[in-house]
Image (cartoon, rainbow, N blue to C red; front, side):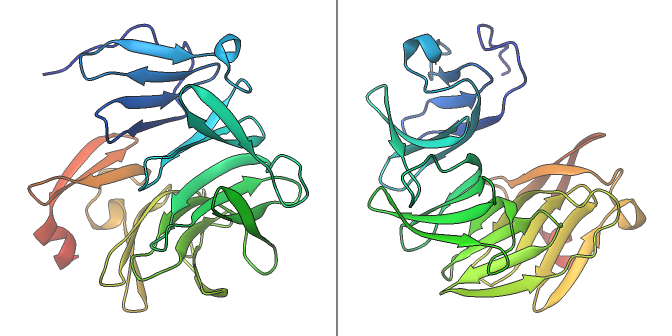
Length: 250
């Protein structure tokens, strides 16, 4: 069944996340909204304690901690209250473009500060900061099951950052180079949604699925695999469904 939920902010959502408690959080301009399983909606706005106006990113870690990027800072949300996480210099981290948690339990944040930086957080404190050229600036982060994280760089490439070492994978994108989502598998393969198709990286080789070899349009905003091992791609011309067997054959 489908439901239309009213009462959310008037702007387009910045992100949506389903929590372990069954509730869905929606990052909005001017509010952080929460949709309960029964469909009821509650919102935290600046007058209610939201420490800013624009909610940029969200992450619920494996321990159940809720991390929220608001304006130019990173915060922990607990019992309706926000606690700021400062950078190594005691200042706000900068606008949080991406958040992820690695296999070791460290939280990583891609900060669009001046200059941009990648930060590693342990025990609720910034433990390390990485700037260019050591680590290319990015927006999208994803955990690598074998350790480390994957970064979708601002230049449209993939970077594996693990144990202090950088492995860069050039995707040679055409036109809009933005990467929208990254998912890494146990076998070392990576899938990425991009403005220039669905990108696959496996055994050192890069493949790209576009209108030239099966997709009805090039822009892939996101994707997900369901419980029946079918893949769903959200594109700019509609939703595309394909079987896992077809994906593996490609």
